[in-house]
Image 1 (cartoon, rainbow, N blue to C red):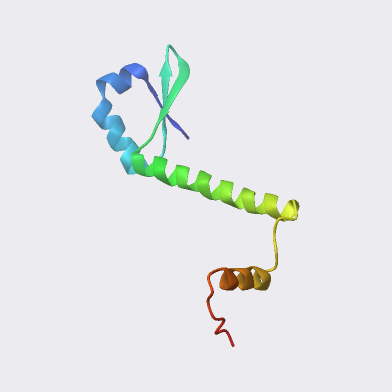
Image 2 (cartoon, rainbow, N blue to C red):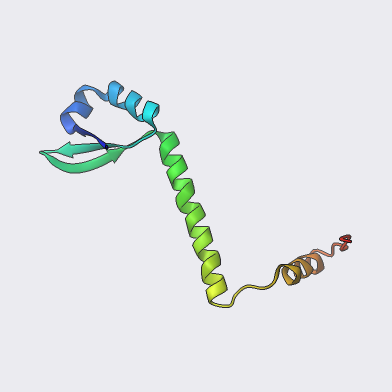
Length: 92
């Protein structure tokens, strides 16, 4: 169940709401005049969420590359990298 607080609660009880965000690692929904207005969360929770978004974008980029035929087999890609950086292939 989401935690919902009013903007008045946020103003009057900031420290308690901050502690709640840090202890639960969950967002707190803030209402203004009885309607949803903001969502607040700890920096740690935000960083984790943002990191997931970045990962999902990279995964989607990879899927798009495969779907648009902009990919190659791993052994072909490895050969191009070895050639590009003039590295000897020591794989057995």
